[in-house]
Length: 232
Length: 232
Image 1 (cartoon, rainbow over the protein chains, first blue to last red):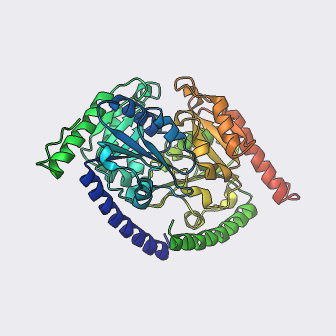
Image 2 (tube, rainbow over the protein chains, first blue to last red):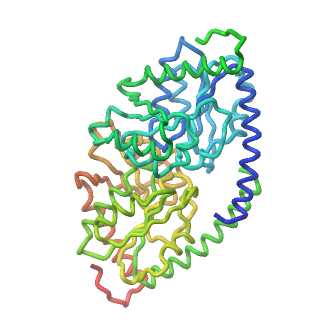
Image 3 (cartoon, rainbow over the protein chains, first blue to last red):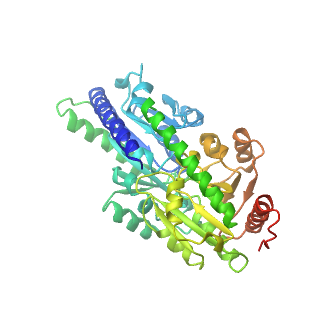
């Protein structure tokens, strides 16, 4: 990469880190846990979110910010759940940044939410370096993509807190090799937690929801030990 | 995107266009047709190339340049076919550019090839703007990704000459809607040719090979009408 690009990018990332720190403070103050979903296009972020929002409905107050280059298809799909949803269209930009998130949150009362999902632009490269102030970053990885993706896109795995294997109902049809996938993850990020899910059949969705609930309680415990706010 | 980034990017793209023009001239002079494969990670670029190289073996002289952030897994997979293959590892860069291609070609006698495949980094955003001097850019699109990807990543479809639907053997298992996919392509790129393929079952591979052979003859006819070199 040309030196001038590297220099300008470093300036941009520094500015993003500052904005992300501000967002993290706002999220903490409002008592909202933020989950950033990153993956390749078509790994099933929206399908997992559709299922998640509908399962969480009535149990806690969840909302979503959805990033795409173009279209508001995903926001419309997710709004069916009844959860508040906003779309961010990035034009030609291959990731969300903290400024886009801050702008999309304008006028949104964060204290009205327990959990905010951010569905990033489908990309295994660009979102890696952009902190959005999230509590948890989950990298999705569908069984149809091949077991070696963690090896090929190590940076995004290094920036993630959790891997979510999706479309496991297709594992047999595509001859997915779980051991090879586990080994690929371990080579770039030893011990990274992997949850196996299928938004279609519901397999693994309870474990995923438990993980989200735990995050909520955990986040609160850490940040405001004396607040005693109920976790659901 | 911040103004300085836009300005620097424009400079970089201009430089890339100049380099790509030089590459295109070299490819033309050497009589090699260059096919750039772009897609999301895990859409099956390498699987299609494996099958393609092995089918072409003995029929024409094909080679491949393979781009990835990390690993030379794909080059090793493709080398099994016996075709000459070189890997480009881009580090954190989300696309190939003309300079990387030129560097990877150093010392390679292009006249020894009829067809050179360039497997781009798995990304539906970044490669759009980088001309590599290719004769044909094919955007791959697997049935497991969902029918709306063209709508969400219009720029890459606008830069492509052909769409190749992959993994069609899984179409039924994932409930893929062909009409919706066709409509999505037409909304961003009316009439773009779509070839349906399965590298696993071989479905559609003959049509893909015919398309490649036609490209070869066509490219030669246009560029060197009097050369009279046999096309296979």
